[in-house]
Image 1 (cartoon, one colour):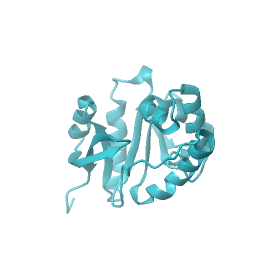
Image 2 (cartoon, helix red, strand yellow):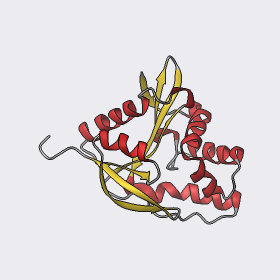
Image 3 (cartoon, one colour):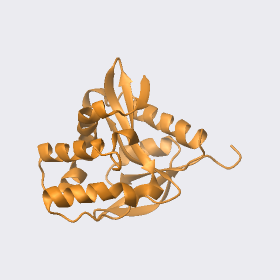
Image 4 (cartoon, helix red, strand yellow):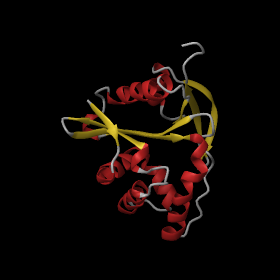
Length: 189
């Protein structure tokens, strides 16, 4: 499997994968259940260099030159700044105020989204993505990784726990209660 940072040329495929993983959230952001509009919104944010969804915040996972998965993550300390272009776009294009709860904070690299293409799910790619992120961010750089998981998604929670993530509390996002998990290396590792 080839792993690389996202590029501008990947915007369409990144948008499709992000929408696959966060469909209901994207609809909530734009205020309507319109797949085409949600994809246009995501693509615009992927192309914006200072957005939380920007192509350079995405790691791309390829198999035989096909993008089969991605991981979107960024420094939690930058969340407010990274949300500014998102809020502006939503206000300008959908007339909505964008001010969701903070899903991350300073002190963690936040895994905003992990997506695996529909025809490659169930093949262990999600685990490979997590293994890569743990190695790249926790092992090599000493960062704590954070993510949120829906109370109604026990399979995802089991995967994260199996990969060494620990539940550290609960958070709300768009009014929904979610479990907050973190991964970090033990001291002196």
